[in-house]
Length: 58
Image (cartoon, rainbow, N blue to C red):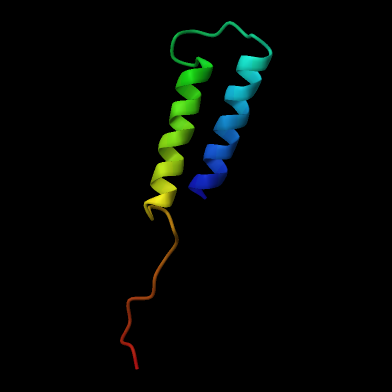
């Protein structure tokens, strides 16, 4: 799930950069790209990977 959100953030950063939109200092293409990289790092780190069964193994 985090990988999909990071892909969407990368696409938004690309659109901001390609269209040369003037945004405020918070939503620059670099900041949006860094948010996407942070989410991708969390995804690779195993956060948000899904539920695991915590029962007895037979």
